[in-house]
Length: 142
Ligand SMILES: [Fe+2]
Image (cartoon, rainbow, N blue to C red; front, side, top):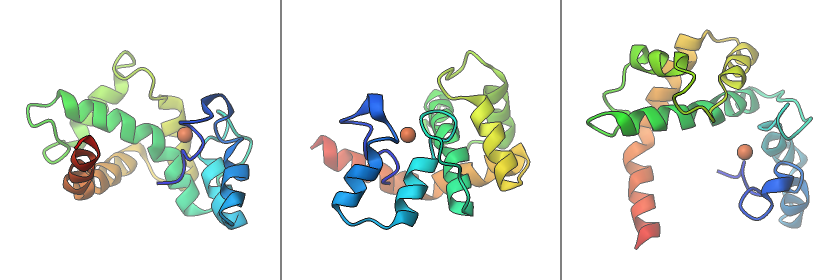
């Protein structure tokens, strides 16, 4: 939840302003490393090391692609999304073009998963929290 802590107020300094903000709340060096590493090779030179950091790196782009694909479905949900459907969207470079396929591939390699495994695990994780996230978003709108 914290990985984009600096993005809203400092989009031009994304992953660079985060350490300063997190130090203000006495965040640990491990937490700061984890936050900054999600932008590795994009806006940060901090390399993901911990497994959680590698998964965050891989799924930050992928969750955007999955959610864009979910919104195109009649159900507007990940609940009935199959890996094969996501693979088609992944291969269509014009679909959600802002979601970097290269980063997703690099992330899967870092974790040591093939793309099918990354896609399946990420769909399942998003499916599990979809209702809760929707509820929270509705509260914000109120
Ligand atoms: Fe980010």
